[in-house]
Image 1 (cartoon, helix red, strand yellow):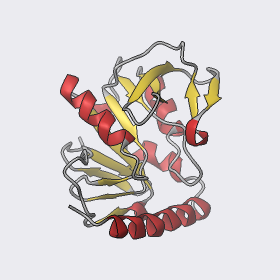
Image 2 (tube, rainbow, N blue to C red; image 1 turned 45 degrees about the horizontal axis):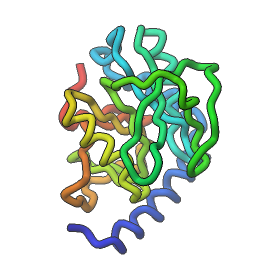
Image 3 (cartoon, rainbow, N blue to C red; image 1 turned 90 degrees about the vertical axis):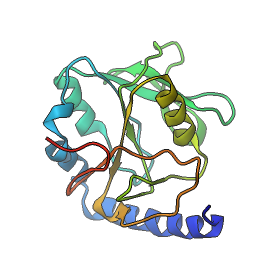
Image 4 (spheres, helix red, strand yellow; image 1 turned 120 degrees about the vertical axis):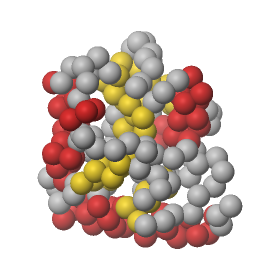
Length: 193
């Protein structure tokens, strides 16, 4: 088990690197599209994205490309308390509400959907698929629930600086299947075409 202090220090360092990368490369999100595997441009799949917090890699250009390839989109909605996330159908232009942590979410009456692919925001990731988030565990609980219900791919979106060789992991951490950065595709459990 990792020390909370070591994770806190890593978070601070990686958040600073992420903010610097976001300032230095404002077009980085568009680069994700170039590194997305063609095999994952499958019509009919439900792809859950997210609305980025300041400094997070913006999935919007990739989500637009996936939508044009025939994917259906979704965004996460926080349940009450510390539970897992639900996913509601989303299309560009749909109304959103700003909720907990300042995150924009679909209206609660939007249809709930089961994603095939979850685009995961992160603070850091490593070459084994360990993901470092903000420490609240929302995505770990969500991915555990989704994986218990059926197959789902978890693909982290990051700036190159957010990927390290190794990160501390805890038993409850849910691994990523791949990471897409502005400089390439890291297929951890999912190999590119």
